[in-house]
Length: 235
Image 1: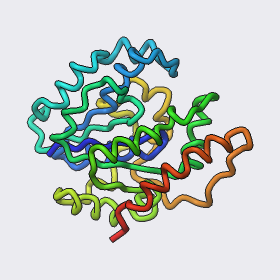
Image 2: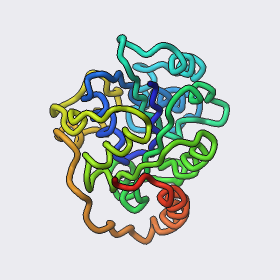
Image 3: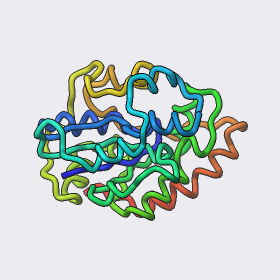
Image 4: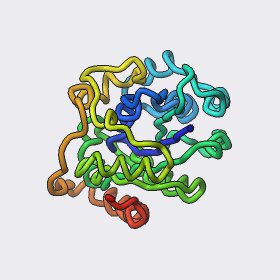
């Protein structure tokens, strides 16, 4: 099985990648379209030069690899994708042969977390419009990061049942530290998840969004709520 997990940044996406890698039967790929996105868009992201030097930048070549055989003889392949990396002219046909899953998180939490890493934030940076369009185009289940944090075993068990993949309890824990499949950008973004050995506990109240981010929150919230309304329930 090929799984394309679509998620905006600061959205439990790396922890989910680690969970699927911990199954033992699943190859993983960390944001394969990040370097092509940077190359094509000119976006000024942290570690831009290092990312472009270390990862493939041709979107057609990356798409062909996504459409190709599962690596390392694994039974399954989990690909962590960011919706905003898929520029309009990037090939998307490969996704038709994947189980597409859409991981969402409340924008107040995403904005608060993202602001710790980058000063300037746009709606496109956090990917809500792109994610809604991809879900409308590709279909597939929606799962909320808040539900995973609240009860990882139930949430991941329900997700696995939804896509026809046997749940493995090993998905709930992984060794601390960097992983050999991390993208080079891990040095900037993955400090917290590298300290983890499993999913953190349930999240508390929503963070306060400062006034200068209020317009951003107001734009993102209805897009999030449209997908939250159809998210998988905790079973």
